[in-house]
Image (tube, rainbow, N blue to C red):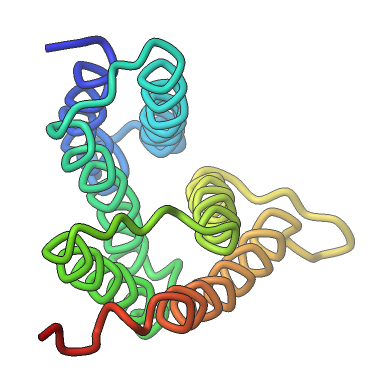
Length: 188
């Protein structure tokens, strides 16, 4: 197993630890969400790192093509579901985000069946960036409040990033479907 694939598997292994520290009421106060935040950031950085290494050293594998996006989806979806449990994110937002991931994954499977590779779009990359930023801010909001004039600044920034991520989620879905609508046509 090459280094990018090891980093991907490391990211998957980190997910249960992340969930534990984010949800566990183990008497650590604000320390537990900070540990969860550190784990989430490390896991997110491995996503960036494994892709760069794989492309730079031509270490792209079928395993990596399958597991890397799956690991990303597991990390983000786990975080969002936990944040619903913590009442930091409305469930309807998470349903839309997860539904988009299922739709795009299914769409890519259909495309792959026709030997078509659908690359990540600019909108999808923006969506991921804002999802990660929103998750980081929402986890920070679990740990402490940074008030300015009675307003929790972290919470406000988290909400803004979350709603931008939601809008980008819908835009990126529409973009994928519009650009690749021929994939859905019946092949003779």
